[in-house]
Amino acid sequence: MDFKHTIILAMASIVSFILSALLGRVVIPWLHKLKFGQTILEDGPSWHQKKQGTPTMGGILFITGFTAAALVAVALTYLLKANHLFETAYENARFWGGIGLALGCGLIGFADDYIKVVKKRNLGLTALQKLLLQLLLATGYAVLMYAFGGGHFTIPFFGEVNWGVWYVPFTVFVIVAMTNATNLTDGVDGLCGTTAFVAALALMLLGGLTGHLSQGVLASALAGGLAGFLLWNLHPAQVFMGDTGSLFIGGALTALAFGIEQPFLLVPIGILYIAENLSVILQVSYFKITHGKRLFKMSPLHHHFEMCGWSEGRIVLTFSAVTLVGCVAAILLQMFA
Image 1 (cartoon, rainbow, N blue to C red):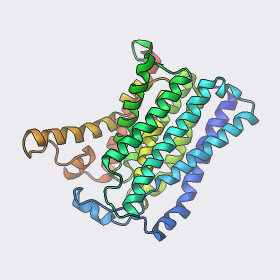
Image 2 (cartoon, one colour):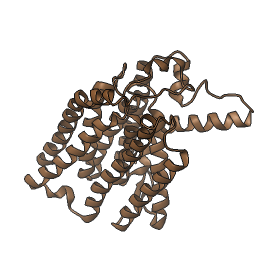
Image 3 (cartoon, one colour):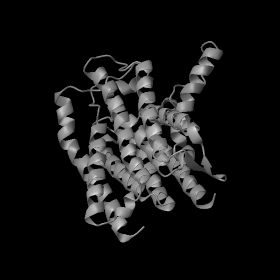
């Protein structure tokens, strides 16, 4: 990593942070005025009802910051003649394809939020509608990456493996699984944003370690935007990210992992998201098998700990610490596996 790249990396995070933080002063009152308030479902913890009416769709803050920062980074790349960030067509495809995947996921989330708050349909898009849109978007991204020379990535302890055409269905599966997992994690003030911030920092470091500098720039922009958003989202939240933000995060983290050709590192980095997803699957399966018994007091997992008496702050701190441990493990795997 040279001096020019360091400047671009720093500017990406700074621009994203400032824009995301300042937009909160404009967007949050605007969302209040439009009455884009969150509807709290009755199947969640009863004390969450006091959050009724808190503006949602706040993911717009860090999505805007991220996108603007990425464009600034590209401009700086040419101004500073640091063109090594985009040396090949594949590198360009990963950069712009990653942005496209993240924004596409955010757009699906926006549609879901819009239906909930404007059309007054509490569940938003149907499960089938959301899945079909995710599959379509994920397939487009996977085919694009494969067409530009993808099809291979590194597996810890095994080295680089060429998956051939199997790269496409594997990539689609990971994208859909990850976006749904981050969506489930967004249920406590600051939880999804904080864990994603930690994950983005890890992916920024991994971008440097793997030599995929443009991906490090995107990860830096994501981290900066999330930091700005958390000023408004930590407990007590003044705005929720909504599906707009949580699906965007899932798409961005997945694109970054594939961008550095290390998707298997999403297992330790996203261990918290995997646990949240599994808690729902296990809860539903156990409920059906036992004809009404529950494995957890409530799912997803963060609600179980809420029902055990944990405060939202304690949950965010603990889950972020777990994510940090997973991220350190991912970095060590990259360095030594």
